[in-house]
Amino acid sequence: MSATTASAPPAPGILDRLALRLGTVASSRRCHAAAARFRAQGRDSEALRLELRAARAGIAEAQYEVGRAYASGRGAPASLSHSVLWLERAADAGSAPAQALLAALFLHGRPPAVGEEASALLFETTADRGAPDYRTALSWARQAAEGGSADGQAIAGYILANGPEELRSLEEAERWYRRSVEADSPQGLLGLGLLLSGRGVSYAVEAAGLIARAAEAGLPSALYAHGVLLERGHGVISDPVAAVARYRVAASQNVRPAQARLGLALLVGRGVEADPVAAETWLRRAALAGDAEAAVLVGDLYARGEGLPPNHIEAGKWFRLAAEAGHAQATRALGLLYLLGLGVARDEDEGRRWLAIAAQRGDDFARTEVGRRALAGLELERQEIQAEAWFTRDAEAGDPIAAYNLAVCYAEGLGARRDPEKARHWMRQAAEQVVNAQFWYAVMLMRDLGDDASLREARTWLKRAAAEGMMDAAAAYAELLANGRGGPRDVATALRLFEQAAKGGHVGSMFAAGALLGGGHDQPADREAARQWFRSAAECGHRKAQLMLGRYLLRGHGGEVDREAGIAWLRRAADAGDPDGARELAAIGESQVMQAAS
Image: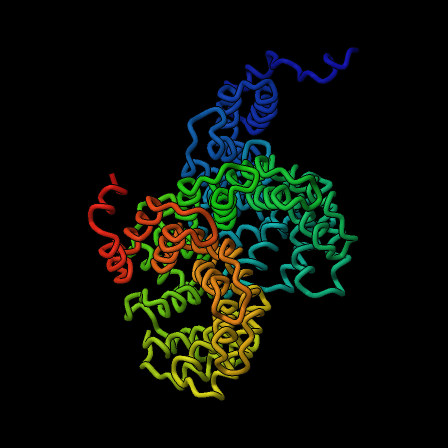
């Protein structure tokens, strides 16, 4: 006999057809048996008619099959109400599979797919769940569990471990999980593994072993969980390559967290060669499935343009998706896009609104940005800032970021009464660990006090912040050195710091470097270099640099004379409001200016 012949179910015979016309229990059982053969051949409608005949005669197994058919829409249009009606009849007759399937329906609001176990949707983040009725689900699950159903045992364990607080019993959950593990239920294995993993390192190896068994059984959510263990080395030897392999299989089966993890691994090259394009594909799938963290990563990927063309319009779409889902970091990023006009029309009000929402959601960086912008004179609506509510408790507990933000709020009167003394106190606390705080504390010392002792202390903090690469601090420290404020004058060091900050794009330092190199500052003159620095600053819009560049071009300092370009730069300085530029233009003579402009 060939394998094909051996595996094919026998065709319904004359006895099966006679069973349709008989009403006895024996004939009803024949209907049920015949229905199984029809179902195996894919003749679902005929199978359901046979099962209905048997179900009406009280055959519990047939009632269960009718309930399954209506739940999945196999042989008739799907109808959960019809499904529950027949499943309850079977369950009341003691059918453990019916009790387990009822538990799943009340837990998830929808049935598992055709051919899946009743417990298939446990732990699946991809399931579209309705409003769960945990209490009814647990009642049916316990009945199924007591009847020996491994599915029922796994569902009962899940609800008792993860359901509402009033229903939880970890001891009973473990008991039912262990019963389902004895039957090699993959959901039971995963559930028990997750339960034990929460008990600390002493259970880590046992938990990892259970989760690995569930993964080997092909359970998608277990593949993801095992990948996490392999990546982190919890209960197993760390193996990022094997972790990525697990994520890939789970991701292909639409496990949303696995898609996000796989995308992140591809993005950073952990356990696999970095591939930003493939990373974007998987992160996008996870984001569209509702993973806000993945949406943030997609937005960040487009914003940075690593391996992909920068696309702030696309970045804004993903940040908005995550922000509307409540993600604080995405909310802050969206606010900054509006403030900068990147990918969206520049809108200060909208930017401030999103920043305030991010701060309300607890994003420390957003709160820092609120404070930074406040110090720069770009205040948010004051009623949106609650300084004490946000920061005081954490600041007093030693959180340097909270101390920094609280200092800003006291300095600017944002959500708190303006108090320069308290502002300096909290900024000093933050300065021990926060570079921005080192800079702003020095600014406060110079601006609020300005005596010799304060200037000496300001030098110390600015030097620390400059050493950390903060260009504003380097420029401020260089200015103190160049002017001899707060200590000895040191023009050579000041010039080195100005040039270092200027190369990093600090416009004020470009001008300052040009000024020191122009001569008359106890520093050998180098007007060619000065002219280049003035040009760099002038092209960035620095008004005084435009004035100086105009003078250099008109007088031939550091290069050839270029009257036309010199007059053009003087005009730009004058148009920007520089009075010296206007006076020098007038002195040159209107006719020459007009001639140069023509």
